[in-house]
Length: 340
Image (cartoon, rainbow, N blue to C red; front, side):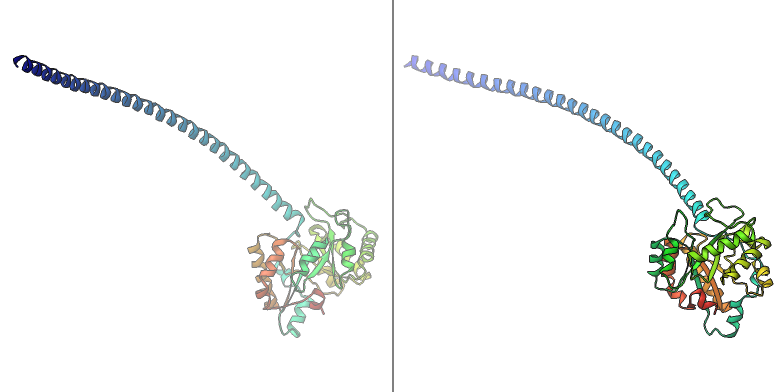
């Protein structure tokens, strides 16, 4: 019996010892695991920091690259804008040289010049009349665009040349037209061929007008293309009016200079002086053109009649289209109807 009790105590002691070792081992493993976990966490944290640093460095490089590209693009854009402004200025200068008349502010004396339209306005016009001449008509597209407005405009055709060889053929299909005759200017680089000059003899001017008449057999009215130098020369104008009278053609002064001698010469021939009152598109800006259209209407209402001149340019035709309501304040007529 005593031996058996001793064996049980020994077994119980061994079991307790085993449990103690197990607990200690578990604790040791937990501590090691924790140390390993935190060590791994710190390593991972450090790796993350390195990754973030690298990403920031890459982002910084990318941003710097983008800034450089943006700077280059900005410089390029500025350069392109500068070039564009230069081109637009050149285009505007070309427009002023080639797409429109020379123009000068009329003198008071010129504005007071007695004309047939003034006299007619005082006597018989019930409603103010406005004739709008569209110069430089040279191509089929010009005619198409003008006719698309469905308002009575007077087309003035440039004589045929290498640039517009079919102008006379296009005119022949119209029931009424004018001729826009090139004349010498004081300063003009884009001169039309066969331009009349102040040094041309009477015979040469007469020959030129007769050729124009052959190209445009129905022509009754001619106005000058440029011509500030020619129209300000009394001798040259005298030769021109003589040639026009021989061919039954009436001269309408585009009035490219205030020094025009047309009033004096026409008076000597006992003919009325007929001239432009308003120039519509000396400035190609559409709002400016609209302003000039309103001014033309105002002048017509004040005088009883008026003559305006423009070109078959997009902005001019668009301005006329958008000004139809204003133009209803006067009677729009062709030049031949205005000068009856």
